Length: 72
Image 1 (spheres, one colour):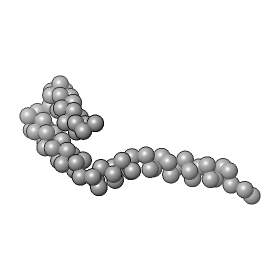
Image 2 (spheres, helix red, strand yellow):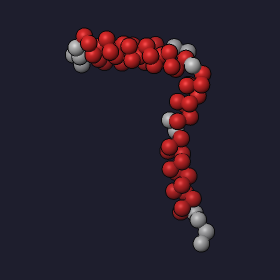
Image 3 (cartoon, one colour):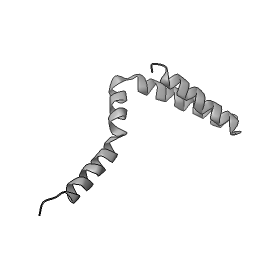
Image 4 (cartoon, helix red, strand yellow):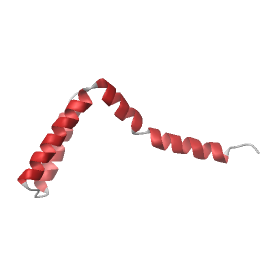
């Protein structure tokens, strides 16, 4: 989805407006989404984010499995 960040930013800003946030909060949200868009376009940051999202769960499941299946 090449336009993911634009759709995500639009959704977040609409949620801010719908919640009755102040103009300053909305402006801060817009700036945050612009910064996120810039970061997400960097392939190294994108790979790092994609790796770090499932990594803690996978590591936890691996450690639990290793503990349960350990030979005595």
